[in-house]
Amino acid sequence: MSEETENRSMHFIRQIIANDIAAGLQPSAVHTRFPPEPNGCLHIGHAKAFCLDFGMALENGGKCNLRFDDTNPDKEDTRFVDSIKEDVRWLGFDWADREYYASDYFEKLYNYAEELILAGKAYVCTLSAEEFKEYRGVPGQPGKEAPGRNRPVEENLDIFRRMRAGEFEEGAYVLRAKIDMNSPNLHMRDPAMYRIKKAEHWRTGGDWCIYPMYDFAHCLSDAIEGITHSLCTLEFEVHRELYDWFIDNTSAKNLNKVQPRQYEFARLNLTHTMMSKRKLQQIVAEGIVEGWDDARMPTLSGMRRRGYTPKSIRDFCEAVGVTKFNSLTELALLEHCVRQDLNKVALRRMAVFDPLEVEIENWEEGKVDELNAINNPEDESAGSRKIKFTKRLFIEKGDFMENPPKKYFRLSPENEVRLRYAYLIKCKEVIKDAEGNVVKLVCTVDPDSRGGNAPDGRKVKGTIHWVSADYAVMMKARLLDVLFTRADMADLPDGTDFMDFFNKDSLVETEFYGEPALLEAKAGQPLQFERNAYFVADEKLWSQDKPVFNRTVTLKESFPKA
Ligand code: ATP
Ligand code: MG
Image: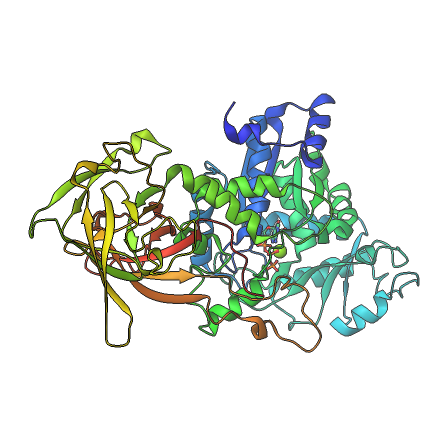
């Protein structure tokens, strides 16, 4: 059993599928779909949805379709189709040849609409959007029937065909299902099925000037594809009755042995960020971030750039679980999953951000010792590399204290410390500038401590990282933090705007001295700068002349400034 399998818990969707299988459904007949609208890049909330869609299919040997929900001609774009495919693939899921588009079904959907008209279950209506709402009424009070609700079938059919032919202006008519104006469920009060929209569609071009509504298109697309379990977020719960109605009242009900069923689960909300595509779109458009794939964004392309791994995101989605209750998930949980995976896979490297020069008094000028440094103590197969020890080194300023408190194990006058993978050194002299700032340390090395241990077995507690001042390379780091200082961005105080909580320190650029091995870094390869944080070479800004690293996550949990 793989580790990912072990971490699975029995949530209610798994239970429903298990029950269906117990009742006779072939496991391999489990068929789900992930239906993104190609009007933005996918975010971590979508990952929760598609890990579930693909996950349920995979676990049972079934299938999951990728279906682009492209029923709205205004807002969609093929560049989002490509980015969605890249993101789903990146997380490790495969839809084989089942890449579908709701627009592929426009003709079929149109025919189902005619079926409903012929059965007296749909009619054309001239009410404006406002009148439509007013007639629909409110829960607890019956709605009002629209004028023309009882128009003869032939007339409805004729007008609907002329709607398709482009004879009317936008808004002149909508096609509505004739269900029940007194239903306690407002969605059942004669919902709209088609509206006139004189817009070119990026796939069907000028073929259509009427477009189906989501509620009509989605369930019938599921039926057309033979979906068994149609998983969606909670806000669709009140649409479920309509979902079933469209299938039950058209010949779509005869398409499959097992009728598609809709099940709803809570959407993911994550602290210090937003899941609203509209708002994400806004900060991209206004240039507040560098694009959809800005490494601070909750998008999958952003997280990839930031150095999050597919496994950590899958683990997170599994850990969040699937429930019926909306809640706010701590970013700390996601970061925990990221650290857990990075600890196993990240190559260790040394980098000094706030350099203090160390000169080794008893080391010959020009002498270089090549030491062995382990690439990943958690993974033997990662091997080791050579690091160069020279007379002049850099350590972090923060690893030296002139007047240390008790139990300070890093460098201080006359105190011995271990340089990672190298030698034991002792501080002999502290050199200061005119203002009294420490600018350099003169140290001695124990030449017999090569590798980091004293031959006499004396205990040296502290180990610090370092780089050779002669060989280290100046590189750029982007220190990334949360986009918003407020935890719950879905529920803002009255009178505030989400930009009021924008974290101005969410991106801090700095320079550091990195060991030369960092020049060989590959975009996407996880790295740990020892004792500092996890980093990754930025896939866009990286070049060997100008190496740029993104800080993926700190080594330990640190809560964002509130
Ligand atoms: P829009 O407001 O544009 O409809 P959306 O976020 O619902 O945005 P879709 O492309 O329609 O975007 O979403 C595809 C699927 O992902 C849907 O099944 C939707 O329910 C699911 N989904 C979207 N956001 C989340 C979220 N935060 N958590 C879990 N699932 C989500
Ligand atoms: Mg949606």
